[in-house]
Length: 386
Ligand code: HEM
Image (tube, rainbow, N blue to C red; front, side):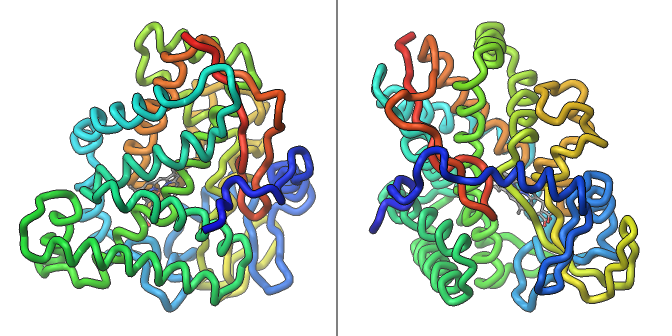
């Protein structure tokens, strides 16, 4: 399979920065219409208000039922109760040792003084390994998942429905195989626990289990890898920020470190948008959005709105945390936030603790993702020994 995360058609310095495009669009046209009639909300106040008003902005965006993403109201709450139980503070804390072990092994194996590909050599293997271990999936499946992440990214970027459907089916087949391996009750892990879980007093159906697992892994493997790319790029290009984070490591300030991670992701949010559908005619800004219109909540644009963040590019976790929308807001707010922040803290912490300096490689430049994806496709760095 082609190594799409490192393909040569992406050349340094030739990619547009989606953030620059979104910043300009938000300034001139915060409620933007696309030729196919969809409406994109770009201003922080509009995105936040829509996410907090699920009665007007429903998540039932397609005939396809995605759990819990596409549900509304009481039905959504029932599935969220089930899902949230897997992602509590205690569950996340229990995952930290395995995350640390994966992070340590990945960082130890990286060369010092030579170019390292952040997304490919650090972000992707880390994402696949920590999610697989969390769910109890065997390590033999890792390469299949890495290939799948790359294919899914390309299919999403192409926007071709047939291609996206083929990739989605492939993922369902992987999950079905994992479920089959647990039917005899011999395995006791998060996947097996989910198979025996109940919603509204009845067992989950096969399709429901597949859907939940798809939403825990499918998008999030790529998102986690992308987040690593964004954070490492920030550190490698901002000496003061890197020494600030190194100091947090030296002082053992775990909470401040996670706040820093979330703030860096606000400045360059790789998880761009989610969809809604208007259930009634509604006016946003000066624009009438007709009932039935598809609506896109653009988190990346909202997170850089000067009306919410006086200096959007400034690193200021204390002032910006209250308005940070990296993990969304409202009933669909990301249930994986605590897990994600722990995982990102552990890998970046390990990277800083085991090196004395992280700089951008002089051999190759960084390459941004192609819109509509954001963040970095390639972040070539050099690690100096500790
Ligand atoms: C890697 C970084 C991640 C980012 C930036 C992120 C961001 C988000 C955002 C913005 C939403 C809100 C969606 C909406 O309002 O429609 C969301 C929802 C969701 N996230 Fe995450 N997420 C990440 C990782 C994860 C992980 C690791 C998991 C699971 C373990 C996860 C599971 C979910 C689920 C199930 C939903 C849907 C919640 C619902 O509809 O009620 N996310 N995420």
